[in-house]
Amino acid sequence: MQQVAGMVRGLKNPVTAFFHLLFKTLAILVYIFGGLFNASFVNLFIVCILLLAFDFWTVKNVSGRLMVGLRWWSEVMEDGSTVWRYESHEDRQGSSMDYWVFWVGLFVPAVVWSIFAIGSVFHFSFDWLLLILTALALSGANIVGYINCKKDAGSQISAGVQSVAARTGMNAAMGSMMQSAAGKAFGFA
Image: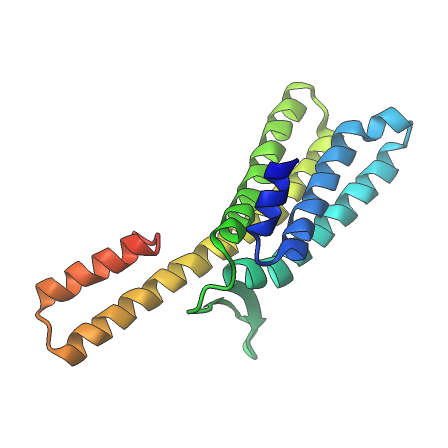
């Protein structure tokens, strides 16, 4: 119990982290244990979809911004084309524990849903496969969006280092060495 309290103390945004994990955990638990309560497939399906939608919205609009300083969205232009926007704050929003909770909370449920998908195919349970594919689509959209945000942050750091190198008159070899070191330091290498 003290380990949990220590982890919570290490979080800069404990309420955000709680909701970051809550909806996805509840969706998985309803999927696993929902049949024990003699609930119909339709009711379980609807509850899971609602929990997955709440999770998608929470991760996309709240926890990504507050815990890791990343945000993504799409805009529809006047000509009908879609432009994806990725934003990363230069100052780190959360603690290292926030980063850990965010990224683990993003990837682990996708792995769990993937395992469920394999099991569903082997059991010929294609009605549940629809739910699982929906969960994977929503998780996958957030994963792709946040990976692109992180790449965008890496390119912003690279551009900043190149700008500093150019202003201070460093030669190209020293500038690329600094760029590589900055990328490794911030996890973008």
